[in-house]
Length: 251
Image 1: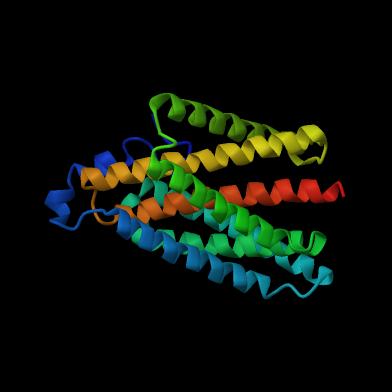
Image 2: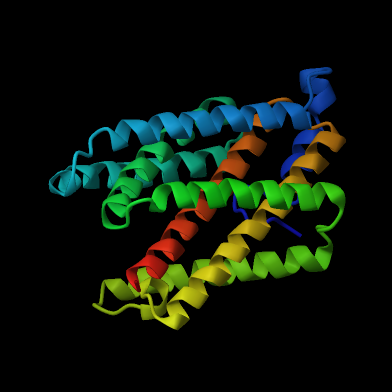
């Protein structure tokens, strides 16, 4: 069973591990190494976000951020796909992804912040608080990535993805699913469910990274594992931002 995170599946680390000792000698993946690289990628995300945020000086400067949002989104998607299909490039593409995605997040966050002051810090705090809580629950054995758990998270993630794609396509014909972006009770409930699904993907990522380290995957997979975690954290942050904006718009 694969992770809901499209960057990882059950063979990601095991396939890479098959040639680890031959190609890399004793240089194999470790959990500590992955943690360190995750921290570095998050710093790069922050650097990118600060760059785009610096271009924001008030509501009148919002139009200047749209090219950064579009460029960051497209660039991040391309780099994510390249990293996913060329895992050996992860030591180079993962940092590039983090910077570009940071530009996207920073510009988008600035627009949300001007509409809902304080929302960005709330979303950031909830994102890392959720990660810390789930990591603690996973390490303590309170949450276990069983096959049924994985099946449920993957199915739910796929369902959310299909809804987002359908809503995007419908937009070209002047229609949309109001509950995805609306602040109705149903819309808020939908966002809560998506936040939970995104958060549970972190558990699958923790499990698969631990499996990779235990299986002796090559060293470059630390970068790939870190990249996968950042992908999930970015998704979680964006969903929390969406949820908080719906809640605050009702006040």
